[in-house]
Every structure is written in C-alpha cells, then in structure tokens.
Image: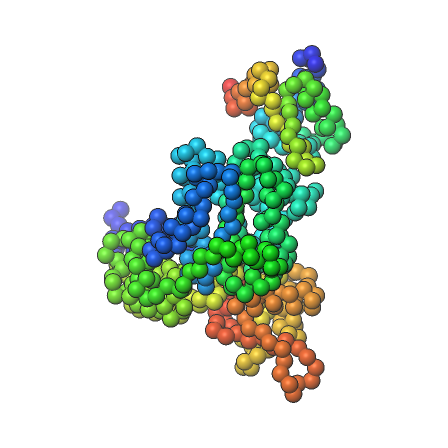
Length: 401
Length: 90
C-alpha cells in the first residue's frame, strides 16, 4: 500500500533545555550580584578557614525578583563544594518558611531529616528538636549553614522566639565547636520591627541589601538564560530588549522576566515558529501576572486556594471594584461544596485573607464610613478575575490528578 | 546469646532485616514495619543490643537503632541479609 499525503515535520522547539528557566534552577553565573556574592563569601570565610571557631548570622533583603534566593543558593553550592575539597563536613540547607507554614518545628524537622531521613516526625517540641539538631551535628562533626527563606512567614506566625532561639542556641556551648550559622532571606525589612531588640541587633549586623535590577542588568540576565535554555538564533536581541523593558516596569523583577521568556518560547513553539517573535512576548505578557504566579498559588493551603477561587469567582460575577468579606465567604462556601470539602470558619478565613493580602494577591482594607457595620473590603488590583480563577483552578486540578 | 536464639525468632530476624535495609530507625518505626507491638520490638532490640549486634544513639528522648558495625558478627549478618535480599531469584 502506498502512503500518500504530506510528510510529517519532526517536532521543532525553540528550547534547547527549558529546565534552565525553572524557578529552582541555580545558574552558574549571577550577573550583577558578584559584589554581594563576594560579601557573603567573606562573611563565611571562617567556615572554611577555621570551622567551629565562630558562627555567623547574615540577612539578605530585597524586593521580589532581585535574586535573594538564588544568591543564597549559589553561595551554598560554592561553599559546600570548597569545604568538601578541604575535607570539612559543611552542609548548606535551604528551607522556605512559607512552605513550612511559618513553623520553626517544620523548618528544623526538614533540616534534621536531611541528616536522618527516617527520624521520627513527632513526639517532641521545636526546642527539643533544636537541641537534637545540634547533637546530630556534634555526632557527625558537621557544620551547618541554614538558609531561612521568606522569613516573614516565620516572624508572622511565631514572632521573635524562633529566631532568638536559633541565634542563641550556641551561647550555652562556649567551649564546644560552634556549628550552626544562619542566612535569613527577607523581602520586607519592616518585619524586623516585630522582633525583640536583641534578636534584631544580632541580625542587623550583617545585612546584604539587593537593589532592584535595572533594564541593562535584566538584559544581561536574560542573555545568560537564553544561551542556556534556547537553541542558537531563536531569540534575537530585540526580543531580549523587549522582555527586559517589560520586567523593568515591574520593579526589575528578574523572576518575572524569566517566566516571560519561558512563556514567549512556549507561544513560539505552539505557533510552530522557528524563533521567538515580539507577538509571542506580548501574548506572554498578558498571560503572566507578576503578582500571581503558579509557584505562589501552589504554596497555598488547600482552603486558601479554595477561598481565593471563591474571591475570583465573586469578582467575576460583579462589576463592583470591591467585595465584602461576607460575599467572599458565600462564594467560598459554594466552591467548598463543589470540591466536597468542609468549609472553614470565619476566623480561619480572615487569617487566610491576611495571608493572601500579605502575598500581594489581593488588597484588603476596613470598610469605609457610611456603611452600616464593619467589614473588610477586598479588591483585586492587577489580575483579571477570570485569569485568576483559571490559574487557581489549574493548580487545584493538578493537585487532584 | 547463642546463634539459634537470634535466628529462631521471627521478630528478631525481621528487625535485623529492616535495619539492614534502612540503616537507622527509631523503635516505633521498627515496630510498625516489622508488624510487632512497641514492647515486643523493644525487648527484641534490647536482646540484640546485649548480644552486640545492634547499637543505639540517643537524641533527647528518641533512640535510633542501627547495626553495630564494630562487631564482626553484626557485619557478617548484615552482609548475609543483603546477599539474601538482592539474590532473591537465584
């Protein structure tokens, strides 16, 4: 039998390796953060030269997408590699407080589990666990740099005690080797005001503040990522310029720039284009909202997601700029019914609202004068309700499958 | 402990197999995996520890058990279990 018809074109992608655009990828080079990286290395020089003699506490602050996390991880990779070469048992562990629900217990548990993967998961307090961690380090003659990312979440839920305990744990061990150093990563320095003065002063001694990226700096970052992730000649300088321009308008958010680049590449692939076109970037720009990203939504609790979905639906149905807490609760109840979940009470929802507002997804304010009673008014600033609904539904659907 | 006392007890052999597979584990988890209750697992572990085959580390209230690598008998039993489980089909 003779097969007729058009020959099949092999699938062509503009990407060479799209994992290089993943949020968790740590690139080999950090353009325009060399100075800060050097500073961080200097702060921790002792860990290589005289381990156990002292410990360090460093605070990295900066707005969203200024490279705080990647800076810390990059430093972690380098220093552990150097320590290994010198035969020092130094570990770098990066934990995200938001993923740990702002609980010191969970942060420490994750840390201990990296040393003992089968360590029992319950039956002790956070303070006991901290002692156990030090004991584990002593036993293995190990040194640890613990990076606590999104510190806001920890301060918000547990105040200044956890940090106080972490920074002071070694003070009772004057003659024993000092094993635990801390790198705190914080977006909003105002949270430091919630700490007691002694903890604050300990942390504020070594601050590395990251300024937002300028357009030329974003261009350099994008150039690096393009050469890692895309096939040669598929992304022109003009495209990089356009993305850098868009991201610099979003307060120099490099993460946004990289996500934009990835989506533009996806749109180019979907339209079977051999290269990324300005139209692909424009399309990507309307689909990526810098305030609502997939990783942000995925890190929310199930009921936080359901509540957010309720809020999005409520805004979709109304033309008003603000909705009340009561209205949001009503749509949330329907969403819960749809998903077969038991709805949470008012106080819990109010906590979720505060959390969502702190993340910048929504804005809340007390109801204005002239309205009877007192309620919280909710507004969506920059994300169209229908898109938010779609994003949350997608994450919820993925979770279920 | 005579050798027949180690190998004649199903519970002890199970515990040794679990420790050979996992490495280090606390009592509750050993008991759960071996299908024994806590007290029985504890008694077996005590006997095995007295014979020098296993040892434990203490973290606060938590005891983590593992093979006692310093004991040549323990090392040989561990190797026997490894061999037994990897060459199942032969």
